[in-house]
Amino acid sequence: MEASEAVESAQNGPAPAPEAVPEPVTRSVSRRRTGRTLALIAVAAVLGVIGGTAVGYGVQAERPPTPLPALNQPDLAYPAKPLPKGEEPGPLPASEDAGAKTEGDLRKLLVPRPAGARENPAGPRDGWYDVASYAGEFSDESWMLTFLGENHLRRIAHRSWESGENRTTIVRLVQFGPSDVVGALEHARDQLSYMDAEEHADDVGDAIEGSGNGRYYLYPARREAGYLDLYRARAVFQRGDVMAEIDIFDTEKISKKDIRTLAEKQLERL
Image (cartoon, rainbow, N blue to C red; front, side, top):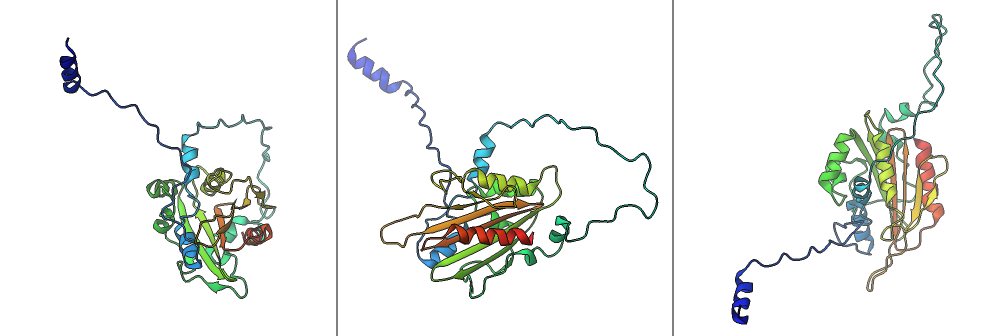
């Protein structure tokens, strides 16, 4: 075959399939660019654009299931006969029954706004927070709506405030109904699972004393020419059927004491 024929054949024949180029692996997708002024910080906090809070679910979905350890416990002992009438144990008092607290108005369990703090004009009003808005804070809104539905999301209580010159604080209580799994625990675990990533807190955080599974974090400062520095602190924990999440944003450094104390106060109310 002459060279001209070879060229013509190559031009008319099927083009070779391009090599697959792997997509870059990212652990978060911001819905909007983060600003540095107080107004933009407040809006960003409400919309959930800082931190890619749904990344844990994507990471978790790709992991193989972790086998549960074998059950190894002695047989449960039951009384041979029912206790005589009048000798049955009574119900737990409300002070000892964690579930009794969350059966009432969940909004009343939100940590109160500190003295001198101001209402956050950029965010939703304190009170109930609708599921569509909450799911919209995550990089995969559809996935989150499915997750919340499958785990029997019950309701979300919200409170936020401003304090100091440029500080915004947001507190959420996310409550789940009865299910085959503890939805609040699953939600908390997945939110905690990505916090040590470089693009997030880049740290394992510190335990919230008394929570059993909660942690709090300080994020590295985010700096960009022409903007104020942005600092963030976050706390996540689960108590019973409620997952609590607290975020603080500021243009000044946030101390560990600030986020730890607020998390402990919220834990006490649950």
